[in-house]
Amino acid sequence: MKDLDLTTLRLFVAVCDARSIARVGEREHIVPSAISKRLAQLEQDLGCRLLTRIRRGVEPTAAGETLREHALGLLGAAQRVSDDMRAYTSGASGLVRLIATTSSVAESLPDDIADFLKIPAHQAIRVNVQEQLSRDVVRALREGSVSLGVCWDAADLSGLQTYPYRQDHLAIVAHEGHPLAGRTRLAFVDTLAFDHVALPAASAVQLMLVRAAAASGQAIRYRAEVSTFEAALRVVRSGLGISVVPQEVAQPLAAAFKLCIIPLTDAWAQRRFAICFQDERSLSAAARLLAEYLAEVGRKA
Image 1: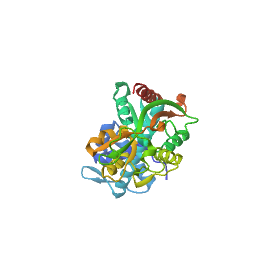
Image 2 (image 1 turned 60 degrees about the vertical axis):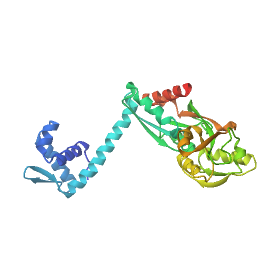
Image 3 (image 1 turned 180 degrees about the vertical axis):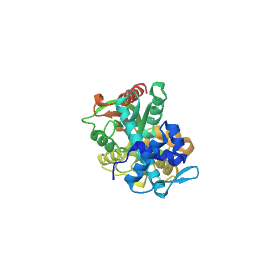
């Protein structure tokens, strides 16, 4: 079978939708006989009848309906390829792929990206954000599958270039009836006598907590494990335990969930995020603009 021609597929879909070769020819400024020739060649290449004539035009056969569905997928994929490549050739336009940690996505990153895209000069830029663990952010950047990453700057960022971004502060979140609820500040070691609600074992926060507990010669008592910060807050609200989350994530829900937020005094509880990339010179204009914008937001925060 010959390779399928995208122009012919586009015309075929248009004819299926309009039920008329003449109307498509008028709209596309192509003589109907030229469209008919393309469609006849398509039928010959595929070895089946795609269109059948009706009283006032044409309609797709069963095979034609199947081809139309496949053609829509192929045409959509081709358009996405074109859009992605334009990001590398058309200055401040196109697509920026960004991979970020759960903490940064749960905090200010979405709002910062939204503010960036509202700037009139950035209206032709699109940003695709993917959420991953810190280790996966670093791996994707090193493999070159994404342009930019945002992760905790304590990760192994060797070989990558970085800009400082925002900071956050880890805190204990407890139900207002919990014995720790009256505390104003707290060291993590003082929480180990109580049940905890854990995040996934491979997350940066959870790995850090396990190391901190081990350094004190103790272990964390887990009552439950959840996959997101919001889920952790909901479990804490039920009174099943306490959890360590960024206070910037907990604050908006604290009043509604009747939660107390107790900042941790440990040095590692104050975290800074970094904007990461392989090489500034290899960034598209759009990716460079976004990285510099986020860095400026970090300086002002």
